[in-house]
Image (cartoon, rainbow, N blue to C red; front, top):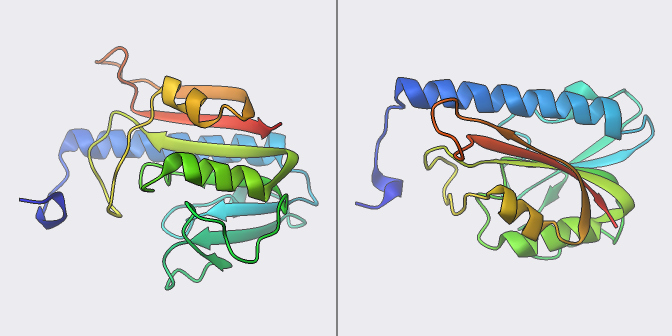
Length: 184
């Protein structure tokens, strides 16, 4: 049976891991907003509508635009991140937030290339994705990105931090990664 047809009630373990991942993303957004986003920045928040997003963690002077593939999302930009986003000029954004998205795109290297194009030189990216977590929606759920995968995806960036949320019961199988990287 295809995954898209399976009806699943999350286990207690899944609920615990998901709560830890969400708390980790919130902490990363707060840290990023405080440390990496100046008061006059223009920020792109990719697919924030199902999650908290950056807005609660930045000052009123920060302009936040949004992007999603879903035309019903109400985002500023509707586009496939794996292709050039029509209307967004090179280097438009001072910062980009891409949390819990890259595991869902079909071409993560293309998506990161497009993020880099939209980010101004010296601009900063906050990205995250689960690693040791079950398949989840919105489907497709295509990838799990390890520490080594993040380094390959962000080879054209300077990685400032690459943090893992560890599974206390499984060494070398973190639940989640967050990364802050600067466009070179």
